Image (cartoon, rainbow, N blue to C red):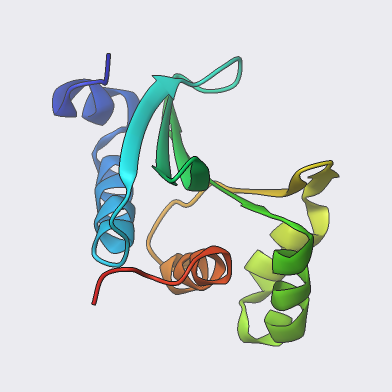
Length: 134
């Protein structure tokens, strides 16, 4: 059962709820995707995935006063990131370097507190999939 707008606002706090909604809007203006709410596992209250054709583009996570944004880059996608690494902020490069690599890819988790990294987030999503909205 997805949280209501009020529940999500109460959980995140108004400033982070605004970050959450702006990030969703930023993704949705570029990508036509299925959106799926799940339980957030041990570390998060909620997970909100953007998927299409069985593949996940990215996921947002919510817990008290915290937003998570997860992108998983596979082997070829990591090579693309490495090739254009200098175009990303130092913060995104550091997150990439510190991210754990699993059998299915490098799991890069961000905890945005404002919209300052959104251009980089969209760049990471572009590596995974070309936007399918004009």
